[in-house]
Amino acid sequence: MIKFKNVSKMYPPNIVGLEEINLHISAGEFVSIVGQSGTGKSTLAKMLFAEERPTRGTIEIGGWDITNIRSKDVPVLRRQIGVVFQDFKLLQKKTVYENVAFALQVAGVMPRRIREIVPAVLNIVNLDKMHERFPTQLSGGEQQRVAIARSLVHQPKVLIADEPTGNLDTLNSREIVDLLQRINEFGTTVLLVTHDREIVNRIKKRVITLEGGTIVSDVEQGRYKL
Amino acid sequence: MFVSTYRITKFAFQNFWRNFWLSVITITMLVMTLVTVNILLILNYVTDQAISSVEDRIEVSVYFEQDTKQETVDSAVSYLRGLSQVRDVVTISPDDALKRFTEQHKDSPVVLDSLNELGGNPFGATLIVKAKEAQDFTQILDALENPQFRDAIREKDFSDYQQIIERIQGTTERIRFFGLVIMGIFIAIAILIVFNTVRIGIFIHREEIGIMRLVGASNWFIKAPFLLEMILLSLLAILLVVAIIYPGLAALEPKFSFFFANDSIGLIDYFEKNGLRIFGIEFGVLVVLTLLSTSLAMRKYLKV
Image (cartoon, rainbow over all chains, first blue to last red; front, side):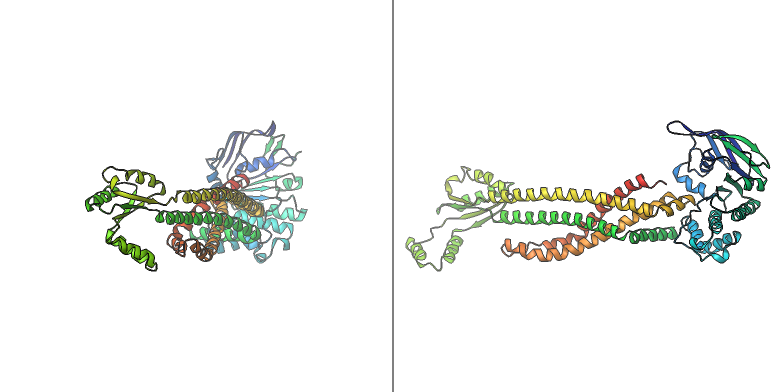
């Protein structure tokens, strides 16, 4: 599903972002990528949706070599990959429904189809009764669920969650991780980038640990080691 | 396709309204640029009319001796008509010349008495020669030195309008030069303002743009509203210019006519006949300029 082959990322003048990353993630896996701040976790995640390009090496997703993906193909890639961030990235002047629908509108989806998809994904994240609320009227956990709902509208094969619990309390964090696990059970490959020890230990699935831009451990049913 | 076009148009209008005052400033600058262009056009038209009006009045009157044979006059007419510089030759027969003279001096009995005393018709044939250009007269006068009829010509009367024309052309050239400089400055300012409007538009919409990119909106979908907004501003600018120019022409025309001996110079007529073409071309050029500026701003500030 996802292959990193000898991937390195250098930033000028001579800063190492990632170094010689070799990685294989199968379809349907739930993988936590852990490490301290500045170890290259987010860089690795960003490379998957072409926000960052590798300096060396190759990256493949579902057999598609995206190493030197053309600018016009990036939107096609991004419609197959859902992304969730720590800061939710919701539009404050749009309601929950509108925020989720926006992702479909900009992709040219017909209104009738939007009216079918949005309630369905809001139902998955258990926000169907809050669709008229604005982000400011929601808790952090609820806002993150809206972001997850938005990331699901294109039925992505891969969901990347970059520190999704960074702004949440323990209870909300658990809810979000439970939701990600549920989504994974539907068959979506989930990559969780985090430095939250408790969450990683609770998931008990594959853990890849990064340090100084390199993979120092890759363990099935692993724990947070650092 | 239709749905995307509708959404792009909606985003373009949102850009316009959320950026209302900046849009107003941009339109004002575009209008000022276009008004300058149209003033130059009007100036060009009026100058052409002025020169052609003066040129129309320039003529050489060639007076033949009283006893000149008709064949000599005819051969002079044929010769002159064969010259590329000659626009028209009108022949006035001795009888017509007499009639004209009598008519012109009907209130002057002294002149008419003198004419009667001479007995008979003292006038020879006269040719009125009109040139295509004012500067052609020197060559026409030289041509009249042809030995075939040189001796039959009693007198040549030529009013020199060349200086007047040169003065009109000189003044016009100076005004045109300043007009072009002002137009250049306005165009540069308009480009910078469009650039800035787009930059601010991108800044205001940075969150939406970021999310659009994240969820897989095509590059075209992200860029198109900014391009469309500038086409919309250009369209509004050209409509405002049309609304300014036509009443302006109606006010100017009588003032110009005063200088043209109360003859209409056809300024309104000219703009009515060519308005679609003139404003169409102006709109086209304006769109190209604003889109160029928008593209530059997007290349610099909109990373897709």
